[in-house]
Amino acid sequence: MKLVLDPASSTRSFYFDKKDERVLFGDIREKETHLLTNNQTIHIEPDEVMDFRQIPYPDESFQCVVFDPPHRFNLKSESDFIKKYGSLKRESWQEDLSKGFSECFRVLKVNGTLIFKWSEVSIPLREILKLTPCKPVLGHPSGKRMGTHWVLFLKTE
Image (tube, rainbow, N blue to C red; front, side):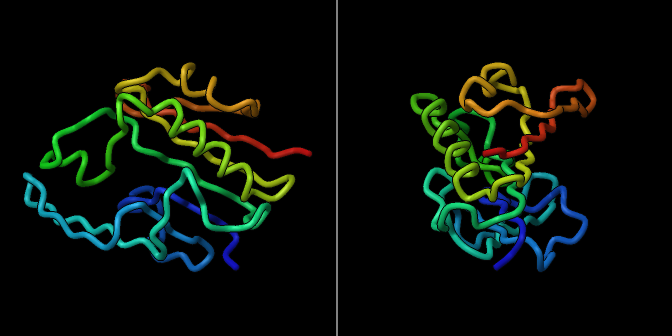
């Protein structure tokens, strides 16, 4: 069993080693290759196809979970952004992300860490944090406009 789960890994863009053997890379999309408008080729190649709203692992399976869900609404299917990251559904985003948090914490071991990444392009972080009863330990904004947030949670009993 791997130590780390990333159930929405997309292009694995922030990993130093995109084939790190300690990480189980999941995504709702199967293997895909896209040529973007800037002539960059991207690959979506999950180790396992999975939906972060229904993670197919028993309770307390992973020491760490990385949760970086899509964070924009109803984009056109031909947009570069949706090809890279997917999109949220405007009508169900709160329920989808709430289920995602619940599932991520369910498969996380007690005293394990959940690392959450969120970009405030469509929805402020404060609205997202209302979707989980778990209290974050720390957070850090980054990016040109400080709109991307890294948040650390610790699962306690």
